[in-house]
Length: 520
Image 1 (tube, one colour):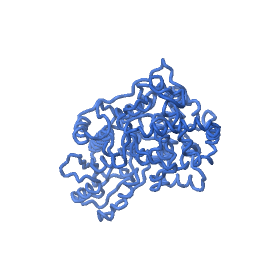
Image 2: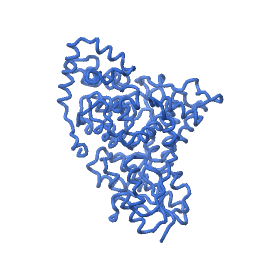
Image 3: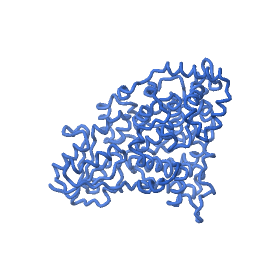
Image 4: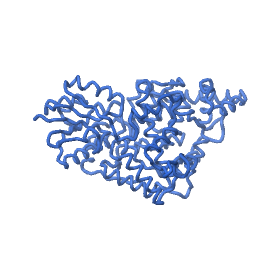
């Protein structure tokens, strides 16, 4: 039967207000959702990520059908499944002979390139609509970035606050008289303070079927599948977010940079996978958090810190991604060449900070932003691991990872591989930072207090080896001036000892070569 429009919805577009569904005619249109092997395996995604997306897609299809909307849903184990978006579109076109195909633009460059060819390949009009679920369009970001010598999130964030009116007073000034309360968000977690448990959603029958599928078809992928506790519907995600607002948001600001042994989530919201898949609306979550401050149930430093992550960082990295792709994926300013250490896949290392962050990632497909930036990212930066290897790892292991959000955070912020287009300096740190912001070092076999000698924390000598290797590239960076002067004042024999220890340590690491990244 011929239909007017075939409307394809991707797995990270599970929003009823999606632009491609905005004018849907239930009598004449059909929605298509497909689980395709190509998307599940272009990197070896964490088992929980695959299960989360497939289950959320299936629940979204059910919700559409309950509205009376015609839906074609193709499961991965359908024997006729063509394994790709194009293959499934061909089959759907053959079934329904639509007059046109309507889609919302994808979040990743590779899919955008493929989608641009669909009209010719299918010999059918393909309407590609803008994704208006974000605060800032591609064109608006490009206009903001035009003629700026440097692109800094802080100034973009201020502009977004002005545009949206979020956390602004009646006079057009930031609430509290400051744009940024980051200095108040770096407290060490007290020993007697424990964080409430995040909401865990028991799997229903639909999720149970997906878990069986993932266990059977993706057994060799990274990560632990069970226990599975993610929300998989918009209603469940909204409930999980509300629990955060009521129980953890008040302490989020103070301790958002803290880390603690055995604590995977602390006071974080753990909603990024829901935002990035479309189950939560960024405007709605920012509005709800702002209301918590205005109601007096959460302090301003917590509310501003949360809103900065959503309205600031999330929008900024998306803008950078689409402004600078595809060349951005090949950036390697520091000429890092090392293969990825094997412990990134196993968590088996005597460095407690890395073992904790990676083991939590294996279990939950989640680690909070400081674990990602200042532990796993910092080590890769200091060790000189190739950006392509690090980017693939981050894309594999996290449930919230899509290239548009992962690549700028890793290439630009964690690895300084873009030479400062994103961040004003490398986020390189010795073990002192980890010791200050966590209790990891107390149970570690390495000594964080010394810089050289047997049993010293590897972050310490790797930090100064990083400075020695990259000093010439960083000498014009004003934010590195003090560090470089300190390095230049060091005794040559001390520098030589640290560099020799760094060389020996790195040579002793079991690494994963380029052709083996996807085999682990």
